[in-house]
Amino acid sequence: MATKKISQLTTGTTANASDKLPIERSGANFYITPAMIWTYIQALTGNMAATARTAVRKNSTGSVFERRRLNLIEGSNVTLTVADDSGNEEVDITIAASGGGGGYTQGASVYHSSSQSFTSGAAAFLAFNSENYDTDTMHNTVTNNSRLTITTNGVYLFTFYGYFSSNSTGRRYAALIGNGADYLVTDTRTAISGSLTGLHFSFIGAFVATDYVQVEAFQDSGGSLSIDTGAYFAAQRIG
Image 1: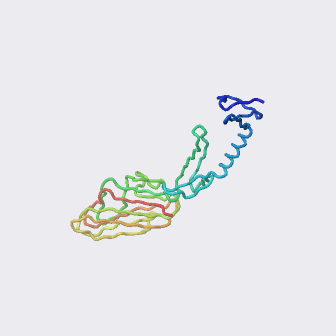
Image 2: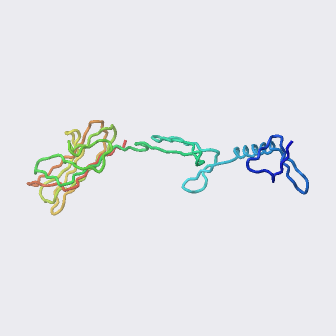
Image 3: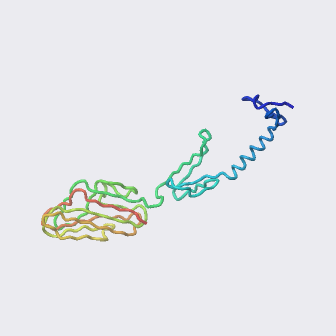
């Protein structure tokens, strides 16, 4: 049976299960076998595995929970990818979210980049040649650009505002028209002397794919009159 002192052990020293490691103290040798050391290490690490805890904090404040492991749960429209990165001694967690998580993303916001002239006494649809955004292919800046077309069934909020140029004669109105014929909501004002005449409305309703809405405007000042640059029209799905 080989006997090795601790001071004799170097990198690469091989120990057999029957070897003894003497620890010298005041001339006395106290022997411990590698098997005993291994048993002790196993017991120690096993105890650590049974009692070690991971603390979870929220917003850098006190620990909310302390448990041996974390369980990551994929929510609606969320995908988790978990991978072991042994080289960096870490577990990598990738969180990916798809559209629609927690809300409704379908909507469009459009406007006209120049003034639009309206003949006195003749109602006409406003054109919208520019977009702030369009997340659901609801609008085309060239073809039928007066329309916001529903492509996803749902409940929608529509809003509009625009201003007729200053003129003190007659009336002004703006109306939300559904599918080219149905008057859904109207804002009518008497012209204000020396001031722009502002028109605006909002409307909530249920619509299905292929339905479309437009803004009709009217003035009877006795001559042509413009809705000034920046008339705004928007739709947002809310349910």
